[in-house]
Length: 107
Image (cartoon, helix red, strand yellow):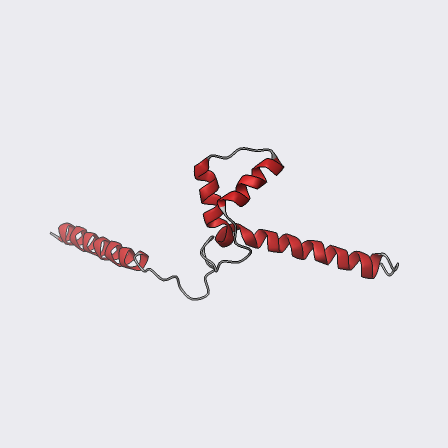
């Protein structure tokens, strides 16, 4: 008899734990302070169109399918533009370093 009571209690507690875990995982909002997921931030950068990527194909000498071009034009401002902003900041920082410090011989 005590053995079956123990099994009943352990099974009940496991079900209760599983139910609690599933309700915690079902929350839609992340806890405060968590970083945003990729591609969910605000849109930044210039507007681009299907034709912009079509012209870029010629410059880079690659070919994309129509579907890939549409997807790239649709998701550009949300997912990739920040990389170009970062690149511009790095280039400007390098130029400032060159003209202010390196060229004047203070390094």
